[in-house]
Image 1 (cartoon, rainbow, N blue to C red):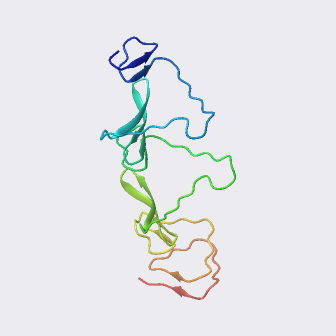
Image 2 (image 1 turned 90 degrees about the horizontal axis):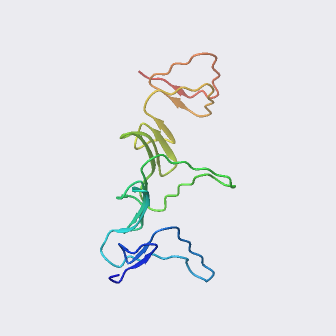
Image 3 (image 1 turned 30 degrees about the vertical axis):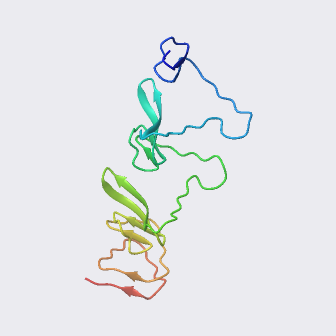
Length: 171
């Protein structure tokens, strides 16, 4: 009908319109299925659960889960879970460009954790100046320091053992 093919429908809405289950099997070399967008339409693929969008692929190789407009390579709206039943790390982040920010964790729009080049980790700071840079209070039940402690306001509760004699205090 009008150059359209319908399977289990007499009124196809698209070039190929299938009502029912579909299975693709590939016993040849190459991909079982290939989608190629050759026009200027930004939406390459959308997967719906009933009428709710759950997955979209747009031009530029961006994949969205629960969004039609992913702004990054993978953009997830909703909860995410990673499980690892294999050997090796459950998640690995590798920065291969010159961008200094490797990872940022936000609570709403407030930065709570950042990791930058050089292995520096910041809590409540975007640009940590030391291996661990905390803006706010720190609590430790057991802490060993084998180098220099530089402080402006240090409160020690309980037993202390000084390993190094380089303790600097200030106002």
